[in-house]
Amino acid sequence: MKRQIKAVYPGSFDPITNGHIYIAERAAALFDELVVSVLLNPQKQATFSIEDRRAMAREALSHLPNVKVNSFTGLLVDFLRREHSRIIIRGLRALSDFEYEFQLALMNRQLAPDIETLFIVTDAKYSYLSSRAVKEIFHFGGPVQDMVPPGVYRRLRERFARRSITS
Image (cartoon, rainbow, N blue to C red; front, top):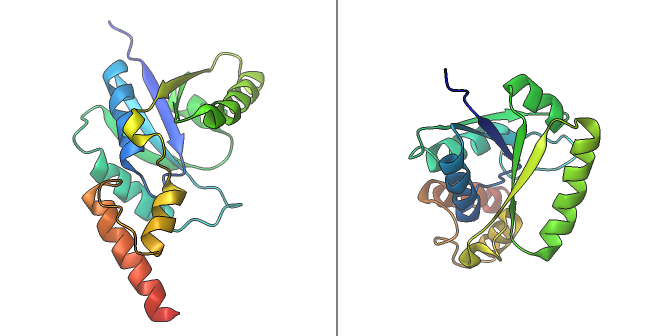
């Protein structure tokens, strides 16, 4: 019986961008199963609820049959153990990402030496893209349609329209 290899791609995904999707597509092609896990970090103020972020990710990744989306809180290494995975996927855009991600990978290795972090370099056309930049550009009226999937764009319009009505 062939052993199934599962990888976990964690992130805030607030919201998921085309850059995230690119990394997920590359990882899904390498592993039998990819778990895209939306982090619930009580110390961060997210724009979208955990339910919205999971829904956006599910919709955006529905074309990948070996990808499932869920969420977690707490230590990533504990989540990987619950998922029976030993592989963390992280995307890299620039050298500044590498420094931060390298530190996280070393910390995770200290906590769980059997878990590996694999880095996937994004396509150059997404090297500038981040969830924070998308939200900021959108907030100030800039075009983000080519940066996020249609479902995310729709939710951005809904979320920021609600904010302007209540402000």
